[in-house]
Image (cartoon, rainbow, N blue to C red; front, side, top):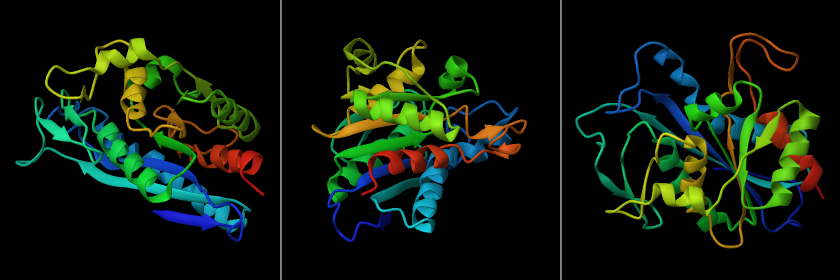
Length: 255
């Protein structure tokens, strides 16, 4: 957890940023295909964006109060690894039926989000994660997906994306999607059916957002790594999310 407060205490409640930091993702027992697995070193892109944003805000002495929380783990097969069919308990007490161990990022994020809300009591919380391959199928490498329970927050991120060069596209959440992750033996499953994979992942996270908290989830799976350079990043790691969040803070949180 990192904190930057450039308001001299004037802004009591911080903006909370939460990042998925899976430093390497093999898929666990639900092992990924070998081809291309070496690229899974970038599965910490959400946490990298949060850390980069905190450094950027401190570096320019932003007049805002922001906390950044990174959930740092590794997802590996092991004799003690969780298995498909296991039921695990989250930090807030909700139980989760593990259908696929490669849907590990949401398990990391749900606890990090709960802890962040318990400790810092934010009114606004944004999480960033390379969460689903389905996001790349939906939007390719052109936009991050945005899911939110608040229209104003979502629009603020979309506008900040246009101004910063980190583009964002909003996708829906709702009860029809939420019921797709219901489980007969736990409070929820960690994956839904084949369709709407990015949305059901967002619905999973939404179940851990406290009442009254404005929340946005940014699925940045298609944006953190590039095979070729473009005007705002080189080939390789793009730093996606730092420009976006820095712009959003400047637009909405600087006093």
